[in-house]
Length: 183
Image (cartoon, rainbow, N blue to C red; front, side):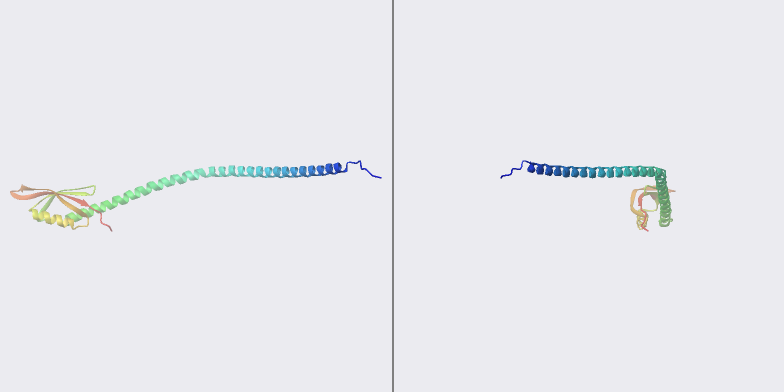
């Protein structure tokens, strides 16, 4: 006798396998969803902490603003003081140069053969006017001034004969560049 199994075993097995797969996929989906939710909460917590930290740092920065303003004020005052000190040093140096220039002019002027009538110093230039016995005295005087470390480029701007007390003398005008020697 042939037996025929009328129970749908293949369909039952197929249905059971389908249920198992569906249950596995559902479990995997729930697991992935759970991981995503946990990750989202972790990131949200991190964002909140970073925002709180940012607020705290901004408050700390604001608390330093008066100190930063005070530092800027002090820097500006320091720059002003340094400028004033530089100006004082320049004035002292130029005053010393002026004294040295006058000393050089006085020591190099032959008083028995030449008389200075005017001396002006401005912007690194010295202008001398005077009277001399002759042109040779003026030329020697120019050479002596050129020999000084404080003078360079001595130029005779004018020379003319003049009568002083019935004597024929030479009036002259010199322009000299004043330099500060390297110490």
